[in-house]
Length: 117
Image (tube, rainbow, N blue to C red; front, side, top):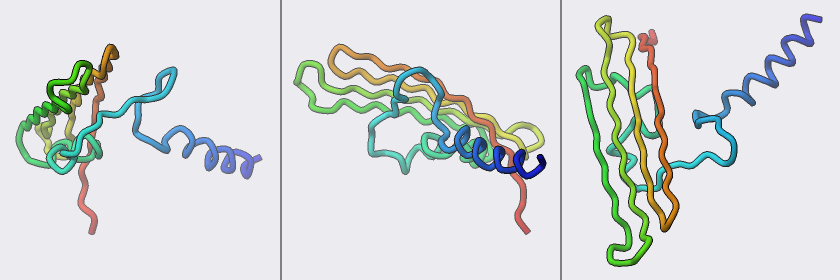
């Protein structure tokens, strides 16, 4: 019986946590922009609190200017370490408009920092 529990845990845990994307009906939508190096919080939730102070990053992208329905992307990410400096929280807001479609998302992040070695 113990073996079955461990096997189920090994199978189900990766299925539930294989990505850090939101779980919603339909296909998850991710922002499309090339400034990932500027916004570490967009690709790694553990980035929250890494700068030792309250940090904000605002990005705006207007692709194919002059064309009707051209993609427009706006993101805001904020993160800060908490008082004990081991815990940090972050927030990532996202809006993208492509043609007549609008996508909005909010992601919350939590990070716990500890020393290795």
